[in-house]
Length: 298
Image (cartoon, rainbow, N blue to C red; front, side, top):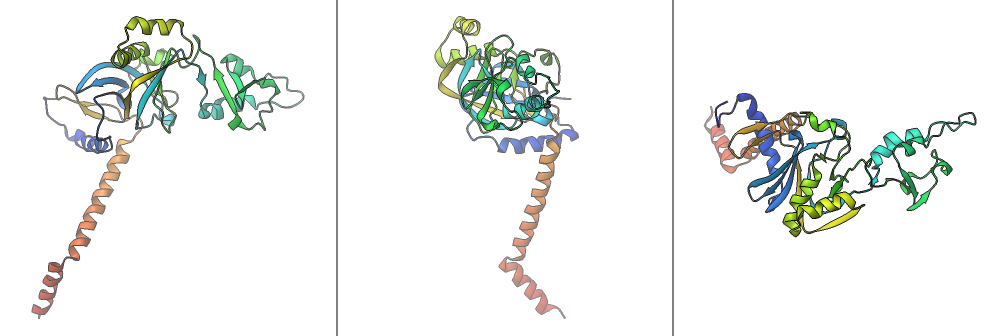
């Protein structure tokens, strides 16, 4: 494709993504983190320049990574992991509720041991074998995995509070980063080299040397670092962007959302046209013109 040339098949995709730009905040920030889900990439942007990029793994279609903007106010080195409600409901609870008959001697709590999960009831550590999992109030229960080499959040998590309870983090599952299409698991985006991202952000925010980040990665446990100046995080779903060289880059529509937006735009156009026509029929000159026609007609 020649530079600047747009293929016919790209036109609708461009219109859909132009519409998505209308949904973005008016001000992105002088520096910000941009996670573009269909691209499977995250970028640290300063001014108009991308200063650092990393591969990401996003949620599979069933657990789609949402589109939103929020402000990153902290990051946690070697974090603990509190199991989110979706995983509790769909994965943990069915296993914990198995059995219950006098002849069933299966240890239903084995899944907790397997994943090194500790159980807390209203914030107090409890013995999971003493809980009636078929009747317990799950709102009062939390499952926590301590920091360590098997922690699912890996070495760093980046917190930007939002209604989706989504945050960017490391992962101990490295295989997906080798794939071109990197959508698996639940909603939170995972980043390939979180220590490098943390070093880039904290060098800008606090002037920290990379050696300090390396020390935190190696020796800290659930150590939270607050940012002096929160940084905007924009999680987007652009299937077409124009790069710094003016070239159109397109990405797969992994959640099948382009068609949804295209249909909405078509319906909005039809509604707008109908509204314009209805308004035109109410204009005074239109009525006078119709009256004149009626008088002059035989």
